[in-house]
Picture 1 (cartoon, rainbow over the protein chains, first blue to last red):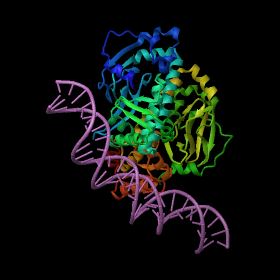
Picture 2: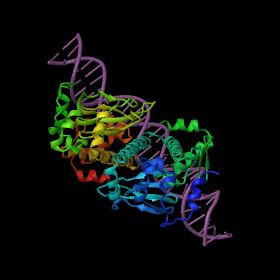
Picture 3: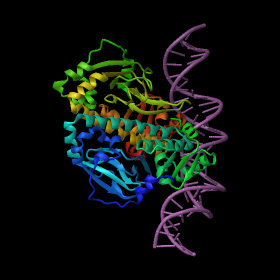
Picture 4: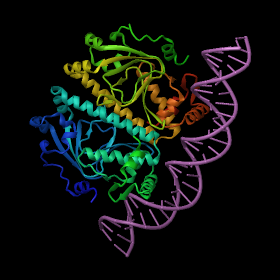
Length: 245
Length: 245
DNA sequence: CGTGGCTTTGAGGGAGGTCAAGCGCCGTGG
DNA sequence: CCACGGCGCTTGACCTCCCTCAAAGCCACG
């Protein structure tokens, strides 16, 4: 069954309090900022990490909301986006477990975010976080490296938006999403896709119709199989060739 | 005369050695990483900063070149880009004085860069730079902030590429370029544009013909005046409205 | 079984790409 | 000094890919 992990997450109840933080067993730790803390030195991390939980569809925050915290996604998928007055929406990135949210200017969020599936986050209050970094430069170092990495990803997204055809965009989306899942331990050519067609369209600068048509066309060519909750790459090489990184 | 600054830079001779670093009088200092150093504490900065100079058209480095340094642009304009096997090119950003270059993965440059005008850079050897940051966390802090800021700019570029029409893209390009120049002290509605039409096209995901047609159309509507080395916004409000940030 | 949200598919149109020609500017050489 | 050639830019005509509008299918839920 495809997307077992995601579906499981959706069906679990979402409790907003009373959850214990357990950094030692956190699946997201090693791919997140938290990896800057040694396993035998998790106490200060655990002390300032506060878990929050959102159901699918809930809004984490809106653009321009005052921001006094940073977050690490520990479970679920988040979309980060900006909306125009006329309703156009650009999804800037999909956040998976391990991803860090700190994009803000002058204490306000630069983008809106909401939960695509059920989501759990670790919340770090800005002041505490700053204090910890003061004493542990390598945490800041780690944060900087992650941000630089994120910048490179953003650049590749730009390439996709600016230079690729609809088919290439979809192929690129599938391949990069597969690799992102792999990073959080789900390495497979069966790619869970919890987001709606509209999300994919707004991520790639296309319309839902074009997304749908393109997926159908790839399926007709026996390169993929479209499933209710995701896509299976039956000819990964061909799809990767289309993605043309 | 429009673009006096840029033209001056182009006509100056480019000497590759024998230039003294003078951080105290560097125009780019206050907007770059170097702002993390106090005015009375510029010696360590000056000690590790090595100036390099490139003529218009020269390549600074190519994608995948090993990278053992970071750079700050002190004069001129640089384009950062990636090229595909089939010749498509996406320009990821234009770097102006004060901008910092450190985008790399695993010691290799993630993108290619070359000089659009004559360019001078301050080079910081990776090892020295890392050593300084070790002792001065606030430099790292500054670097992180700049990188986060850059990430936000990249996201806005993505929005431009994904959601905007040709006219909106051009308007956005003009407005943001104007504001970038303003940041390095050249605040005016007469915008120097040292880059070629092809550069603009590859930056916005358009063709040179569309760039040209769109500029002509904006000029016909009396919103701008197209000049040999740049563009003058005759109706800044209208152009800003089109840019629809 | 009906309703509503999401997706797929089809038909037609338009924004921007492609191809091609011509212009303006500048450096070079006769 | 002017003719020539090259490069970058502009403009026009045509075409294509993707968007728009519309309808129908699928599935979950009441």
